[in-house]
Length: 98
Image 1 (cartoon, one colour):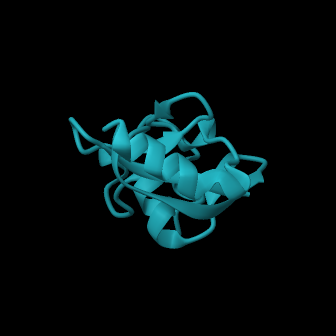
Image 2 (cartoon, rainbow, N blue to C red):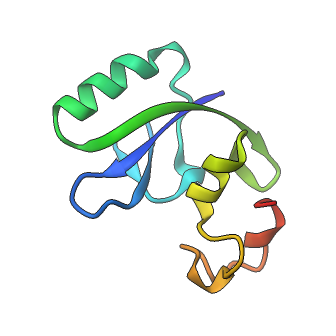
């Protein structure tokens, strides 16, 4: 599975391509397959996202998870202060970070 991530141009927040737009939630990511580079060019050109790139990911019982730890941290937030994560109230938030 290939997923697309980048940063919101206005806020700098980490965002994920859903297939029709962008979301703050990695679990809404769509598999971009071999179309990732074309989507990056289109979305950056339209100024919807900055610094977008394609990453490997996979579906687990808990949802969509990036394969690399860097993107896992980008998806969830800090690994030492779970109260600073985008979903601080999620009791399973720490289960997959490290």
